[in-house]
Amino acid sequence: MKRIIFISLTVLALLGLTIFKLLANSKEAKKKIYIHDMQAAVLVDTEQPRMHTFESAFSYLGVFDAMHQNNVASEASGKLIELLVKEGDQVSKGQVLAKLDDELISLQIENAKLNIAQLKNDNARFANLRKEQAVSSMEAEKMELALKTAEVQLKQLQKQLRGTKILAPFSGVVSKKMADLGSMVMPGTPIVELTDISQLKLSISVPERDVLKFKKGQSVDVSVDAQDKEVKGTIYSISVQADALHNFKVQVLVNNTSSDKILAGMYGNVMLLNNESVKALAVPRKALIGSTKSPKIYVVKNGRAYLNAFSPGTSDGNFIEVVSGLKATDELVIKGQVNLENGMNIKRNK
Image 1: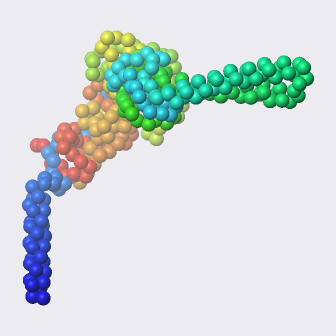
Image 2 (image 1 turned 180 degrees about the horizontal axis):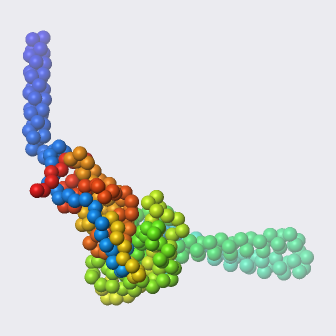
Image 3 (image 1 turned 120 degrees about the vertical axis):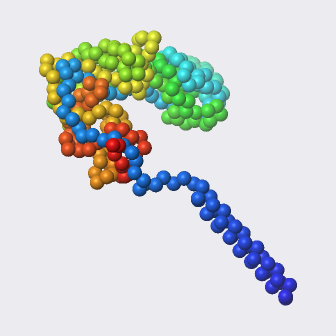
């Protein structure tokens, strides 16, 4: 009995030492983990929105999107046995991208053809017997119907066989592989993502004040930020419904034919000539957070920086017009915002 008590106490002591050691190690580990102090002030430069004169050539910021971008899916079910393209490959419309196992369907087609051949022979015999009135008209019609049913079934199987080859619906570039060899796929399972950038759509947000300056089919100048070049574009569509900020979506079609191709996702500017300059409240473009489609900027309130969305208007490259969402008295962070998070303390540079 004493021995059992001794062993139990020893086990408990070892267990206690283990727990103590684990807790000690946990405390040491937590000390080594860097935890950002949200109360620490971040050094920033600030200024208020200013009145800026936008000259006669206005610029509207946007992002290039591919004219066509689709997930190419399987029409049939089966095992993926061949994937004939890889990411980055240029493919043509109708090109075979992948193949499914078609052995079972091929056997079914052979069986259907044999069945049709047999039914055709039976129909020929029934036709002769019908002439001799050896069989009834109803029996002969049933045999003809069986033949037609078998022919329809053969066409269905042949369509399923064609579906085992996944074809490119349009010419483009394989931008993403979405299935691997050996995968079991079903109808609708995406195999690859195909992107066509032979034409691009530049989507811009135009304030209510300027939207009537755009007409469908109108030719405009488009500058590409990343490539420092200008191309011609055509107004492709103009939204008939404004968003919550009273901006209208305008799409510009650009032919991507040069050797130095524009890539989907790049920034672009639509240049529009106007007879008169406009003076409006503006913020520096360098202060923006996020995309130009839905720009945000840090506004300082009570020593803290808060992310604030606003409605943009025209731009001249360095400044963006504020249509709504900001006031002239707001204090904005124009430098150091990369280190900020919403609600953090700030310290102004002298």
